Image (cartoon, rainbow, N blue to C red; front, top):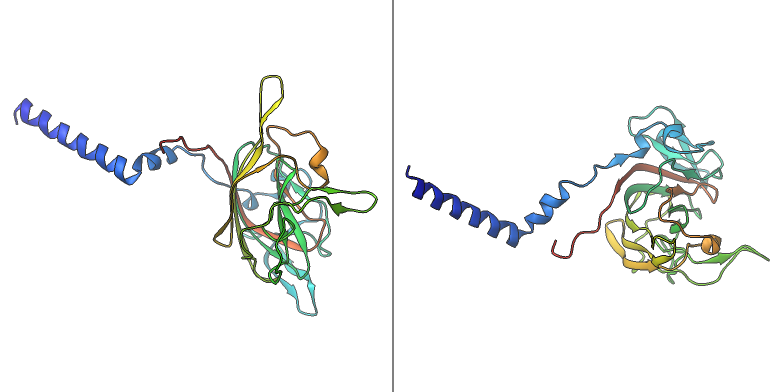
Length: 261
């Protein structure tokens, strides 16, 4: 084969590849190949992942107690992909990861008892609410999937705004497994420590439906709204507000795509 013919073939092939990459978005696929791998937290020993596991336990199965649907019943054991349950009474200390995260992507599944309440907090203080609200008509940030309202503890705990309601009520009834997928971007600070950009819930997907997109959060949520904000922090899985179970908890670092991706 002549050098001229060979060079022509190479040029054609490169041109076709470039066209395919541009028109199919394959450039993004190449970029995503370098993303951090998912880390399944719930598959590792509790004390290894969480600072204080307390009375949380791992089980192979969990369900509503037949005689009292406000409670969960599990079978403690060493499961291959364990379900994490917040104790027999459903009121134990929160699970807080030892690892600190900045921009993070989380996937997990959860199940709550009737009337129960939990949540996942990013940086330990920006909460996506988990609650038994499948039949709720008026949605607020206190509904399942909502960005939790700001609150004050005295004279009695109360909300001081409505938070950010999910776009739709896609929550499932108590006793059913639900999926949650969140991309969270931490607040940004300059060299002097001054905040220059708010925290943001880039995307929140509940049970396969997008319920938040690019929602900035000017303050931490709940009564933590007066606390100093930080560029990174732990993930917190709330365990002191009622029976809840989590499984398939996966996290990875997240990087915002460039404008041309």
